[in-house]
Length: 184
Length: 439
Image 1: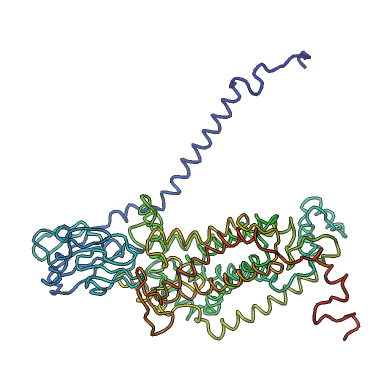
Image 2 (image 1 turned 180 degrees about the vertical axis):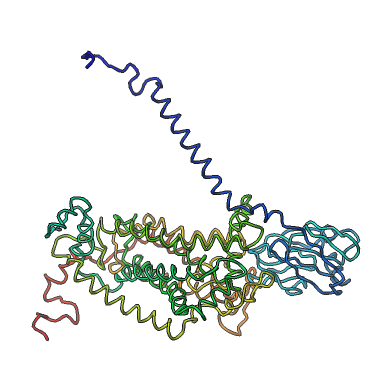
């Protein structure tokens, strides 16, 4: 046993005084533990995000000659329905006429189709409310009607009435020829 | 109630085990000699019934997992194979599917029991909150289980519920993509739902352990809501409540068997026997019956984010209930005004459940069109839902906080046993003097 000094504080850096080496070790060890847990948690969180093969999903090419005037074909793209609708003159006119109407997500009809291709309305067919598939030519505006919670879309796919906050989204696409379109 | 143990090991091996792992002592103190208020009525048997429900779901679920294939191309067919080809597969699957409904019937009665008799009040707040956590886990488990057969309702139900998170500002889209593991509900989603559906029941079992622990510290509440004052107020759990609970469990299993053997699809939806088709949504999409009240609240709000907030708020409000009710009196038996509001609350919940199963624009009184108020006919399900939603939140946020300060409760008994023992003249109607001499 070493000599014991009585009546004197053996620790000059008692609690409440300047940080000492032991405090530093506590903080450093704590920080390392938190960092390690965080670094380990991230892979377990991120594994739930779309995997590489899901992200690499090829784009789709579609033959437009299959769609008759006034009709719509629904194909699957990235797991979601894709509406390809060939609009009639009357439907286009109705959409353009409503450009100035009061709507939740105002957008002009001409920015929702490719220039000079007003008859082709290509949209992601998932209601922007909770993702149901709206039915063709239903609702008060002749565009689409979502049966789940009653959202009405016009012939430009713009939300006009109901709980959906946004217009049906226009995917990225291009015309490869007059009769072929490539989506994605 | 806890702390004092009456267990005395009788044999050498019991003494040996007791000093090493006192597990027999734990069982003895919890379900044999556990002192229980002697006036518990049949509403108190649903705790035991729920334990049986959880057991049935876990056993049948583990068996189903031996035959089920969690893949979008095989899930529906594998469920049909269980129904047609696997020996007794139909029985096990119908037990599991109807068992979920029975579980929710029991849990709703159990919760209304707690609301009526003030079982959430001090010192049982933690017990109540643990119960709310169990309820949340049950809902998550039931939702994910319903997705697994990969029928039309499975698929589009999953689409709608996961899209709820998309209502959150900024992070909404990232969260839904993360939940899906892709750009839509697809194989990755089905696979993870299967994994979590297997895990969650065991988490429920864990929280149930905590729930019972938190019950055994303050002990049971009782129909009078008055604290246990002496040993005269209690009886040992065994045989009094093992037998009472056992009897109730048998009655409950008869109800279960009635659905199981005579109408196994009564509580399900026919559209779920159509394989999932991502390109077509069923014309009338509804959740399982036990989610209908929340679905009605969701649809009552014309705004996406607002509807989602209110729907989750309907459950969140339960967590803070112990601090919303200002009344010192636990049992509604002594709160005549409170009892009335409580009964209306039960009706409001049933009305919400009814509205949740109807189309929002349907008329409440058939054939009568009144006038459009804001966005819908006044005589429509959506307005009835709004009325009931208003009462649901009003009950918790306005009525219970204010009523406790203003109402005059009737006299509570001094203890659980006094109204029975010390007033022979004032015996309740139907009670018999010296019942031991009768029959």
